[in-house]
Length: 228
Ligand code: C5J
Figure 1 (cartoon, protein in one colour):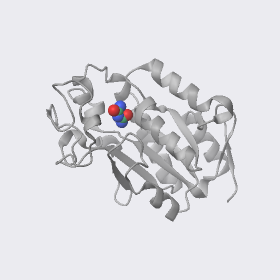
Figure 2 (cartoon, rainbow, N blue to C red):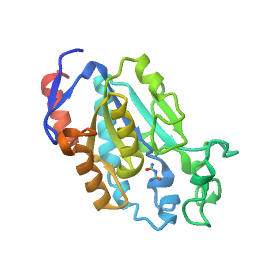
Figure 3 (tube, helix red, strand yellow):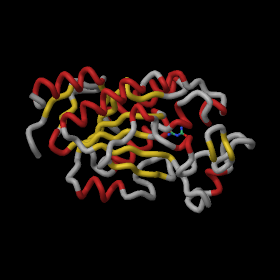
Figure 4 (cartoon, helix red, strand yellow):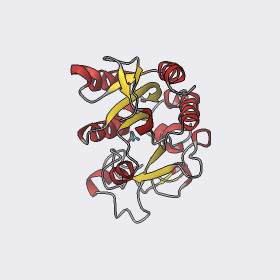
């Protein structure tokens, strides 16, 4: 372990190990976030998701400046749906299911326009991009091996949606022994009450799943103690 940086956070200061930290950006995909995509077609108000894009971009810039590895995920399936359990495919609106033609190509299918990450927060060459068939980033992916091979012990989380893929991924990471910090203003839900509840649940009972803080608090602490 290298020198820890104390990040003001809830429920108490997060002990960041900057030399062993990666930024995880969950599912910043056009279909979830852009007006006219799958998320909006399901009846969701996407403005809550679009509003975090500048903050996620600023967080990415910070991580890149600090030299942290960056891992981007996409919720996506193979075109033949062989990695999509029938139980998952049956969910949602009967007229808009995974694999069906949607407003931006086939819904949640790899390579379709809607499945792409937004240009404003797009991966740079060399960053890790993981296609995940589940809500959690460890299920049926190489994420565990990748993080272990790079000695990562601490994860900073951003992305959408807070209570679905972000929370599931954070819980999976917590069970695997990672210390997890969620950046509150770099994550969003279609339902503000679900975002608040997810953060409350994860940080309760002495950080039972992990910690949360703001981008400003993270930025100021690493700027002061680490990134001189
Ligand atoms: C959802 C996600 N909400 N990325 N996916 O279905 O959270």
